[in-house]
Length: 271
Image (cartoon, rainbow, N blue to C red; front, top):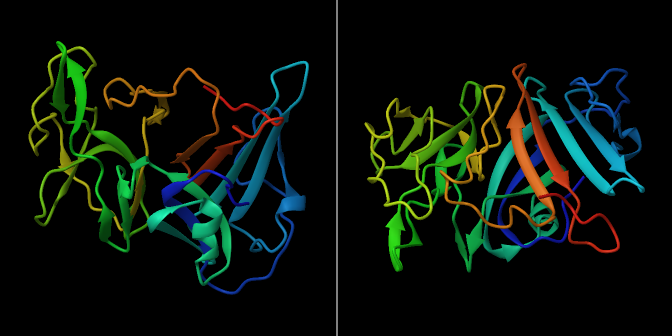
Protein backbone atom coordinates (compact mmCIF):
# COMPACT_ATOMS: atom_id res chain seq x y z
CA UNK A 1 0.00 0.00 0.00
CA UNK A 2 1.45 3.34 -1.08
CA UNK A 3 0.14 6.70 0.06
CA UNK A 4 -0.72 8.75 -3.01
CA UNK A 5 -1.21 12.32 -4.07
CA UNK A 6 0.25 14.44 -1.29
CA UNK A 7 3.46 16.33 -2.03
CA UNK A 8 6.16 15.74 0.61
CA UNK A 9 9.90 15.91 1.18
CA UNK A 10 10.21 13.09 3.69
CA UNK A 11 8.87 9.55 3.66
CA UNK A 12 8.99 6.50 5.93
CA UNK A 13 9.38 3.45 3.71
CA UNK A 14 9.14 -0.29 4.42
CA UNK A 15 11.34 -2.13 1.93
CA UNK A 16 12.33 -5.73 1.15
CA UNK A 17 15.52 -6.72 2.95
CA UNK A 18 15.72 -10.44 2.20
CA UNK A 19 13.97 -12.73 -0.27
CA UNK A 20 10.85 -14.37 1.14
CA UNK A 21 7.79 -16.27 0.04
CA UNK A 22 4.28 -14.91 0.18
CA UNK A 23 1.64 -16.45 2.42
CA UNK A 24 -1.72 -15.48 3.86
CA UNK A 25 -1.50 -15.24 7.67
CA UNK A 26 -4.13 -16.84 9.85
CA UNK A 27 -3.74 -14.46 12.80
CA UNK A 28 -3.31 -10.71 12.98
CA UNK A 29 -0.21 -9.10 14.46
CA UNK A 30 -2.37 -6.84 16.64
CA UNK A 31 -5.90 -7.16 18.07
CA UNK A 32 -8.16 -5.38 15.59
CA UNK A 33 -10.68 -2.83 16.90
CA UNK A 34 -14.28 -3.11 15.76
CA UNK A 35 -14.72 -2.32 12.08
CA UNK A 36 -11.14 -3.11 11.07
CA UNK A 37 -10.27 -6.15 8.95
CA UNK A 38 -7.21 -7.85 7.54
CA UNK A 39 -6.97 -6.72 3.90
CA UNK A 40 -5.54 -9.95 2.47
CA UNK A 41 -6.58 -8.95 -1.05
CA UNK A 42 -4.08 -6.04 -0.87
CA UNK A 43 -1.22 -8.12 0.54
CA UNK A 44 -0.08 -9.87 -2.62
CA UNK A 45 3.69 -10.18 -2.49
CA UNK A 46 3.92 -9.49 1.24
CA UNK A 47 6.43 -11.67 3.17
CA UNK A 48 5.19 -14.82 4.84
CA UNK A 49 5.17 -13.19 8.26
CA UNK A 50 5.86 -9.94 10.07
CA UNK A 51 3.95 -7.54 7.82
CA UNK A 52 0.19 -7.04 7.47
CA UNK A 53 -2.26 -4.49 6.11
CA UNK A 54 -5.60 -3.64 7.74
CA UNK A 55 -8.39 -1.40 6.50
CA UNK A 56 -11.32 0.43 8.10
CA UNK A 57 -14.18 1.50 5.84
CA UNK A 58 -17.13 3.54 7.12
CA UNK A 59 -20.04 4.28 4.82
CA UNK A 60 -23.18 6.42 4.96
CA UNK A 61 -25.29 7.26 6.88
CA UNK A 62 -22.25 7.68 9.15
CA UNK A 63 -19.51 10.06 7.99
CA UNK A 64 -17.63 8.12 5.29
CA UNK A 65 -14.03 7.22 6.04
CA UNK A 66 -11.32 4.92 4.75
CA UNK A 67 -8.21 4.25 6.80
CA UNK A 68 -5.28 1.92 6.18
CA UNK A 69 -2.87 0.55 8.79
CA UNK A 70 0.35 -1.33 8.06
CA UNK A 71 1.62 -3.40 11.00
CA UNK A 72 5.28 -4.45 11.00
CA UNK A 73 6.92 -6.85 13.44
CA UNK A 74 10.48 -5.55 13.67
CA UNK A 75 11.79 -9.00 14.60
CA UNK A 76 10.83 -10.25 11.13
CA UNK A 77 14.08 -10.42 9.11
CA UNK A 78 12.60 -9.70 5.69
CA UNK A 79 11.57 -6.03 6.02
CA UNK A 80 13.58 -2.90 6.74
CA UNK A 81 12.53 0.59 7.80
CA UNK A 82 14.02 3.44 5.77
CA UNK A 83 13.38 7.15 6.35
CA UNK A 84 13.95 8.99 3.05
CA UNK A 85 14.55 12.68 2.28
CA UNK A 86 13.86 13.81 -1.28
CA UNK A 87 15.90 16.53 -2.97
CA UNK A 88 12.72 18.26 -4.20
CA UNK A 89 9.04 17.97 -3.23
CA UNK A 90 7.54 14.72 -4.57
CA UNK A 91 4.65 12.38 -3.81
CA UNK A 92 5.23 9.31 -1.62
CA UNK A 93 4.54 7.18 -4.71
CA UNK A 94 7.35 8.94 -6.59
CA UNK A 95 9.73 8.57 -3.65
CA UNK A 96 8.89 4.87 -3.35
CA UNK A 97 9.38 4.32 -7.08
CA UNK A 98 12.94 5.61 -6.77
CA UNK A 99 13.86 2.82 -4.33
CA UNK A 100 15.80 -0.11 -5.77
CA UNK A 101 14.23 -2.76 -3.52
CA UNK A 102 10.65 -3.94 -3.21
CA UNK A 103 8.58 -1.28 -1.44
CA UNK A 104 5.65 -2.53 0.63
CA UNK A 105 4.53 0.78 2.09
CA UNK A 106 5.45 4.45 2.02
CA UNK A 107 3.95 7.22 4.14
CA UNK A 108 4.59 10.95 4.26
CA UNK A 109 6.52 12.31 7.22
CA UNK A 110 6.77 15.70 8.90
CA UNK A 111 6.21 19.13 7.39
CA UNK A 112 8.13 21.16 4.83
CA UNK A 113 8.29 24.52 3.09
CA UNK A 114 9.91 25.04 -0.29
CA UNK A 115 12.74 22.52 -0.44
CA UNK A 116 13.34 22.51 3.32
CA UNK A 117 12.12 19.76 5.63
CA UNK A 118 10.95 20.91 9.06
CA UNK A 119 11.03 17.38 10.48
CA UNK A 120 13.75 14.96 11.54
CA UNK A 121 14.87 12.46 8.91
CA UNK A 122 17.58 10.04 10.04
CA UNK A 123 18.77 6.90 8.24
CA UNK A 124 21.54 4.48 9.26
CA UNK A 125 22.68 6.92 11.95
CA UNK A 126 23.00 9.86 9.58
CA UNK A 127 20.76 12.89 10.22
CA UNK A 128 19.53 14.04 6.80
CA UNK A 129 17.29 16.76 8.25
CA UNK A 130 16.83 18.02 11.82
CA UNK A 131 13.53 18.83 13.49
CA UNK A 132 12.84 22.54 13.16
CA UNK A 133 14.82 24.41 15.83
CA UNK A 134 12.98 27.72 15.78
CA UNK A 135 9.96 29.36 14.21
CA UNK A 136 8.16 32.67 14.26
CA UNK A 137 4.81 33.24 15.93
CA UNK A 138 3.05 36.52 16.71
CA UNK A 139 3.34 37.68 20.32
CA UNK A 140 2.07 41.08 21.45
CA UNK A 141 1.72 42.15 17.83
CA UNK A 142 5.27 41.29 16.75
CA UNK A 143 6.90 38.28 15.06
CA UNK A 144 8.65 36.40 17.88
CA UNK A 145 11.03 33.42 17.82
CA UNK A 146 9.93 30.24 19.59
CA UNK A 147 11.85 26.99 20.13
CA UNK A 148 9.56 23.93 19.94
CA UNK A 149 10.42 20.41 21.08
CA UNK A 150 8.59 18.27 18.54
CA UNK A 151 7.68 14.61 18.33
CA UNK A 152 9.72 11.95 16.54
CA UNK A 153 9.64 8.18 16.09
CA UNK A 154 12.93 6.29 16.35
CA UNK A 155 14.53 2.86 16.20
CA UNK A 156 17.86 2.20 17.91
CA UNK A 157 20.58 0.03 16.41
CA UNK A 158 19.43 -2.69 18.81
CA UNK A 159 15.84 -2.50 17.60
CA UNK A 160 14.26 -0.57 20.51
CA UNK A 161 11.26 1.52 19.44
CA UNK A 162 10.45 4.90 20.92
CA UNK A 163 8.46 8.09 20.41
CA UNK A 164 9.73 11.20 22.16
CA UNK A 165 9.77 14.99 22.15
CA UNK A 166 13.20 15.98 20.88
CA UNK A 167 15.42 18.97 20.13
CA UNK A 168 18.65 19.18 18.13
CA UNK A 169 21.01 21.09 20.41
CA UNK A 170 24.39 20.79 18.65
CA UNK A 171 26.55 18.83 16.24
CA UNK A 172 28.43 17.03 19.05
CA UNK A 173 28.42 13.33 19.95
CA UNK A 174 24.85 13.57 21.32
CA UNK A 175 23.27 16.24 19.12
CA UNK A 176 19.66 15.27 19.84
CA UNK A 177 18.07 15.34 23.30
CA UNK A 178 14.79 13.59 24.19
CA UNK A 179 12.47 14.86 26.91
CA UNK A 180 9.72 13.12 28.94
CA UNK A 181 7.46 16.13 28.30
CA UNK A 182 7.61 18.87 25.67
CA UNK A 183 8.72 22.40 26.37
CA UNK A 184 5.42 24.00 27.50
CA UNK A 185 5.14 26.62 24.76
CA UNK A 186 1.83 28.30 24.04
CA UNK A 187 0.61 30.78 21.48
CA UNK A 188 0.15 34.32 22.88
CA UNK A 189 2.56 33.53 25.71
CA UNK A 190 6.19 34.68 25.86
CA UNK A 191 8.58 32.09 24.37
CA UNK A 192 10.47 29.73 26.63
CA UNK A 193 14.27 29.42 26.55
CA UNK A 194 16.13 27.46 23.88
CA UNK A 195 16.05 23.76 24.88
CA UNK A 196 19.29 22.33 26.24
CA UNK A 197 20.46 19.13 27.90
CA UNK A 198 19.03 20.56 31.14
CA UNK A 199 15.81 22.21 29.87
CA UNK A 200 13.14 20.90 29.72
CA UNK A 201 13.96 18.68 32.68
CA UNK A 202 14.72 14.99 32.33
CA UNK A 203 16.47 15.27 28.97
CA UNK A 204 18.59 12.34 27.79
CA UNK A 205 20.66 11.73 24.64
CA UNK A 206 18.49 10.39 21.80
CA UNK A 207 20.70 7.85 20.01
CA UNK A 208 18.74 6.41 17.11
CA UNK A 209 19.72 4.48 14.01
CA UNK A 210 16.58 5.40 12.05
CA UNK A 211 14.08 8.15 12.86
CA UNK A 212 11.33 10.25 11.33
CA UNK A 213 9.76 13.39 12.77
CA UNK A 214 6.06 14.16 12.96
CA UNK A 215 3.83 16.49 14.88
CA UNK A 216 2.01 16.54 17.19
CA UNK A 217 2.43 13.60 19.55
CA UNK A 218 -0.91 11.79 19.92
CA UNK A 219 -0.23 8.96 22.39
CA UNK A 220 2.75 8.47 24.72
CA UNK A 221 3.22 5.36 26.87
CA UNK A 222 -0.42 4.36 26.44
CA UNK A 223 -1.83 7.78 27.40
CA UNK A 224 -3.46 10.28 25.06
CA UNK A 225 -1.03 13.21 24.87
CA UNK A 226 -2.04 15.54 22.05
CA UNK A 227 0.61 18.25 22.33
CA UNK A 228 -0.18 20.45 19.34
CA UNK A 229 -0.09 23.59 21.54
CA UNK A 230 3.30 22.82 23.06
CA UNK A 231 4.72 21.85 19.67
CA UNK A 232 3.27 25.02 18.07
CA UNK A 233 1.62 23.00 15.34
CA UNK A 234 -1.94 24.28 15.74
CA UNK A 235 -2.67 24.22 12.00
CA UNK A 236 -5.42 22.43 10.04
CA UNK A 237 -6.56 20.70 13.22
CA UNK A 238 -10.27 21.45 12.84
CA UNK A 239 -10.62 20.82 9.09
CA UNK A 240 -11.14 17.30 7.70
CA UNK A 241 -7.98 16.35 5.80
CA UNK A 242 -5.97 13.31 4.81
CA UNK A 243 -4.01 12.25 7.89
CA UNK A 244 -1.04 10.02 8.62
CA UNK A 245 0.63 8.70 11.75
CA UNK A 246 3.40 6.39 12.89
CA UNK A 247 3.92 4.71 16.24
CA UNK A 248 4.37 1.38 17.97
CA UNK A 249 2.63 -0.95 20.38
CA UNK A 250 4.01 -2.10 23.72
CA UNK A 251 4.67 -5.46 22.08
CA UNK A 252 7.01 -3.91 19.53
CA UNK A 253 4.76 -3.73 16.48
CA UNK A 254 5.26 -0.62 14.33
CA UNK A 255 2.05 0.91 12.96
CA UNK A 256 1.84 3.19 9.92
CA UNK A 257 -1.62 4.73 9.51
CA UNK A 258 -3.02 6.63 6.53
CA UNK A 259 -6.52 8.09 6.41
CA UNK A 260 -7.85 9.07 2.99
CA UNK A 261 -8.93 12.66 2.44
CA UNK A 262 -8.81 15.57 0.00
CA UNK A 263 -9.99 13.26 -2.79
CA UNK A 264 -13.62 14.19 -3.49
CA UNK A 265 -15.99 12.45 -4.01
CA UNK A 266 -14.18 10.12 -1.59
CA UNK A 267 -13.90 10.58 2.20
CA UNK A 268 -13.06 14.08 3.42
CA UNK A 269 -10.65 12.82 6.08
CA UNK A 270 -10.37 13.65 9.77
CA UNK A 271 -9.76 16.67 11.99
